[in-house]
Image (cartoon, rainbow, N blue to C red; front, side, top):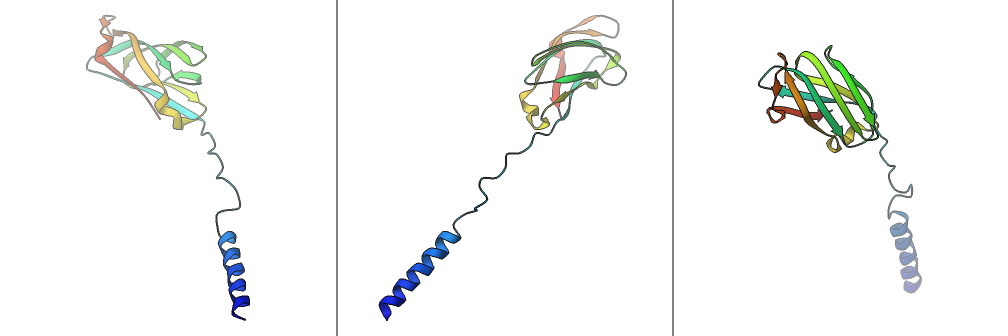
Length: 133
């Protein structure tokens, strides 16, 4: 009888082990994209009246200037070339739509040219820009 008991315990143990070993629903679902808006922010120690920016990094659409500024742009593939003009540009100056806002780190922005509010040329290195969520 002890042999039957050993076999029965082995079968029950195996059933418990295999029955509880993992999730039968499969792998977790892929996270869904979170479409939304990203912004280009600008800061400088001087008053900026106009700036030419290049944004790269992924799909973009619907660029728009912020704060009443004027925007002229060329959007080609994953590159946005934008000229933003205003009375004094700072903070959020440009927004655009992206397929997934979680990819914000893949977007880069550089200042190509800049002018002060008195139309004087400004060194691009004196202006800090970034893409933010």
